[in-house]
Structures are given as C-alpha cells and as structure tokens.
Length: 279
Length: 288
Image 1 (cartoon, each protein chain N blue to C red):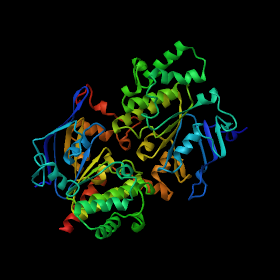
Image 2 (cartoon, helix red, strand yellow; image 1 turned 120 degrees about the horizontal axis):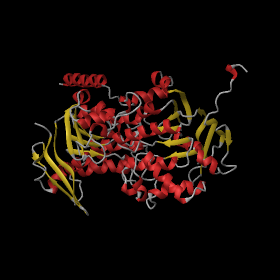
Image 3 (cartoon, chains in turn purple, red; image 1 turned 120 degrees about the vertical axis):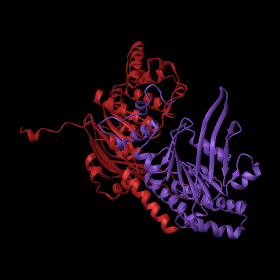
Image 4 (tube, chains in turn purple, red; image 1 turned 180 degrees about the horizontal axis):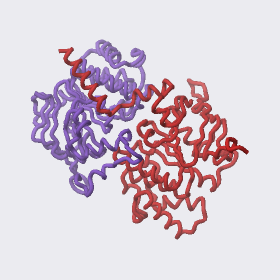
C-alpha cells in the first residue's frame, strides 16, 4: 500500500477576478522508501499540491479531491487537531530558502529543541542531547558550537542542514522537500542532495522532491511526475522519462536543457506546441 | 613587417591585474578590515566573442562584472575599452563611453522601474546620452522591441504586465538602445524557467551575430556557459583559477576547483541515470 495517495486533487484560489485553478485533477502517490520527484516550471502547481497535503494553504484556497490519504488515514476528513498530530511528526517539509525558514531571533539550537520538546515531548536535557545527535547526523561541523549560533551566522548550506535536522527529528515516514537546493551553489547542492539521499535510505523515508531542475531529478528520483499549468503531463520511472519521454511537454523540457543543444540553437517549448496544443 | 609581427587586433575590453578591495568598517567588537574581492585578474575579449565568468557565490564574479560595466572602479590594475585606458574614479565616463558598454542584470523584476512605461524605459538612455529628437527616440524604441521579440504596441505598457522572460527581453532591449559594442550580462537567465531560458539564450545568440556584439557573461551554470561561451574564466575567491577556450576547459579541466564544479553539476545523461538506478537497486537488495 502506498504511503500517500492523492486522486483528482484540485486547488482553486479565489481572486479579485474570479476563481483561479492552480492544480487541476492531479493524481499521485508515493510509496514507503520511495523518492518521487515532482517537476515543473513556475505556475505548474507543483508546490501548491504539496502545501494542500500539509494543510498550509491560505483561506482563499479551496481544496477538493476524490481521495487524499496518508497511510490509510483520510486527510480530508480529519480534524485540524488530528492533522496537526501528523504534520511535523509523520510528514515533515523543508523549503527553498533555508535562511528565511529559520527564525532570525533565536539560536538554531533553540529552534530544533523547540520541535523536540513540543512534538516529541522530550525534556530540556534529552532534547539538547538529541539535537546534538541530529546535527551530527546531518554533517554540521562543530555541532556543539553551532547549536548556539543564530541563523545569520551560518551559511546557506548549513541552514539547510539545520532545516533537514529539524525535519528528520521525529523520524518522519514522509519528507517533502520543496526546491531544497535552488538557492544554493552547485557544490553545496551536491552535498545537500547526497545528504537527503543517504538519510532517505537510512531512515527508509518516502521523499517527495519538488524541483524545476531536470539535473536534480536525474540525480535523485525513482519516479517522476511532470506538471504543467496545474495538470499532470506525465508520470514515469526516472530512466523511462529521460530515455523515452511520452508527453510533448517533457520532450520540450528535456531538449531545452543547454547540455542537450545540438547545433547553435536551443529548441524551445513553443517549437513543440505549435498552435498551443497544450495550454 | 612580416605577417607574424602584425599587431594583434585590439580587444574590445581588456583587464590587467584588476584588483578590488572593499572596506568593512569596524564595530564595537570587530576591527575595521579590508576584503579583497578580486585579486589581480587578467583577461581580454575580442570583438564578437563571449567571455563567460563562472564561479559560486562570493567568488567575486559580480564585482568583476560591475568593474567591466564601468559601475565600480577597480582599486588596482587597469581596464581598457577599445585599447583606451579607462579610470572612472579620475573622470566620470561620458556619453561616448556609456554608449559602448551596457549591462543586463540578473533579476528583471528588480531592474525595471515599476512606475515607468516600457517606452520610457527604452528611450531614457537616449535622453541622457544623446540628442536624438523625441520622434526618432520613439521609432527606435519600437524597432528595438521588435528586435528582441516583443511587439511595438508594448511601448505603452508597464513592467508588471510582462512575464519574467519578457522583462528580461526588455532589459536587453534597454541595454542595446545606445548600440553598445560590449554587453555585460550578470546571470541574465538564472531567474528564468528552463523553457524561457532557452528562448533568451537564443535571442542573445541572434543579437550577437546580427550586431557583432561582444559579451561578458557571468554565470554559475556550467551547462549555460557551455552553450554560449567562446572563452571561459573560472573564478574562485577572487582568483581566476583557470582560463581558456570553452572546448579546452570543458574537455580537460585542470584546476581542482574546476574539476570539483564539474563533478558537482548534475548530469542528465541516460547512462549516468541507469548506473545510479542500478546502484540504488543493489544497495536496497543488500539492505533487505
């Protein structure tokens, strides 16, 4: 049985000019210990569908789905209090801007211990010990000192490691990473992706990786969902997707990669959609 | 004079041992100090060619771009434009020099004034630097809009009415209004979606062919650099660790830093994916 199952998810936003459909009938599922990548460009609805799972959308959003279940529990039917028991423990999330995700007024040690105390009910002393253990697990250098640091005293890569440490603190079964390396340099990106992949294997977590970067997909995913303008264009195993893409949009995305350039022009998405076959 | 002694063609832009220091003022707890962001960099770009400057954040690549674009002065070394030494500290660059060198910035949301219509964005460089009459300024702006793949009727619209890719086209159009010979592009496509990035890169390649432009292209993305560059400079902590033709650097990177950059860049090659998937299967099978 899959860990997270979503069928026919639609998310609409009420705007001044009427309703806007950000996600339009998307199905997806992720298994235990599986890495699912959701790829798309800006406006494809890739983040919105995961925020809907987390219950983090603003009040202007209307979420409907035929099914949205986590580990057999219906996420749509459960109360906010029930959902809060899942979110942050069984399902956790990390975001694109690691420095902005942390509170600048508190030390990172305080912030991770806060999670350990509230979500896991640890006492002050054991929270500190566990925080240190987690900082070691995510490869933060001189962890004792770093616990006393404020976010601005750490680099972007270190802040993302702190975020990951917080996210894995409760041994989650599902980690959702929304563009976790987009704000980072390529050498740091490699370190963070390697870390996520090794944690994923060690903890046997399901991992949903939201990204716009085909390179990140190629380096991490087991399975891939391609989204465009709120709709699912294609779903395939990672090798099939790169070897034999079915949807014209996926083909367009892959050929727009500069490393796939043949000759002196890059094909663009519009080359593949003459007359707007896909809107 | 024998052919071998013919003097080389003057590069459009040349830097000799460019140095830039920033002064960090002291605080109660810390002494004032100088940070050397660029530590003596040499380069030269010939007409119609593209020099790509590659580096990670903090490498000094944008500092160098601002020096080349005559925005900041170097604190040491010489900058030559068309063989003429330029020192913007001693003398502010006049209209002639400004017309030669123009810049396009990374974020097209920040580099266009939200209260200025596109027509005014494009004609402003002409107002400031030339005495072209108003009617001709308008005509040139409309023609430039078409050249960068927009429509003349976009003239009266505001920046918020455009997408990121269209805004970057507008920023490129503005930079080209004075017919520059050198364009400094600081991460011009890194804020854009992949498909839009391809369109803007194609546009830049077309404009270079058509107008004989010389580009200094700052980027952190090796796949973009490989597509657009003739010459590549890899810069780390203010030092140019490796310089050479694109083919030389991509086929045989010699400096450890360049090699590390290549090793960290994700590959979308099918064989590499197949190998990774196989490794993952094996490690899972071993774990069970």
